[in-house]
Length: 122
Image (cartoon, rainbow, N blue to C red; front, side, top):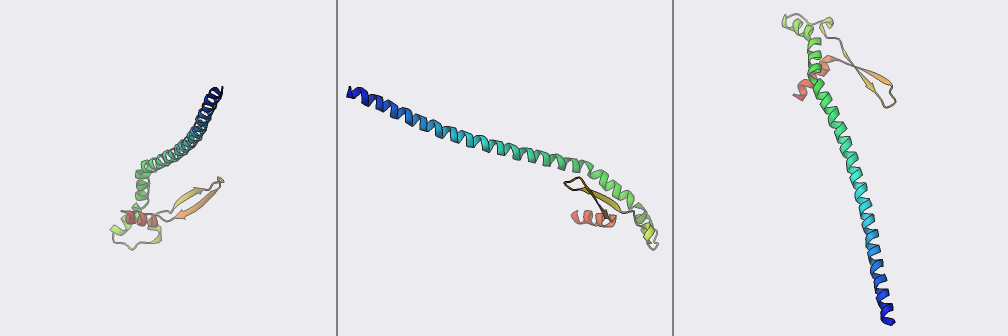
């Protein structure tokens, strides 16, 4: 009978060890799932960011053309050797920034500054 009790106690000890391993495995699995969800969120953010960059780059040629057309009268005035008066300067571009509340803020940007920024970036 004593042998039977020790065999039962040994089985109970093995089952408890297995239960403890299963609990540890479940904890590690939950942590892994949380990390994978975090990685998924980061990848989603990166995808959104690359979409924004792609949109900006697709419009870049149009932006350069707009600035070039607006500066055309200034170029004509300087190539004729005339003194450049204020009327020859292109109309200022206006940027409209939307803050998080959806309110609009207007910022006037002189195209010469824009061209200077572009030349500096080149």
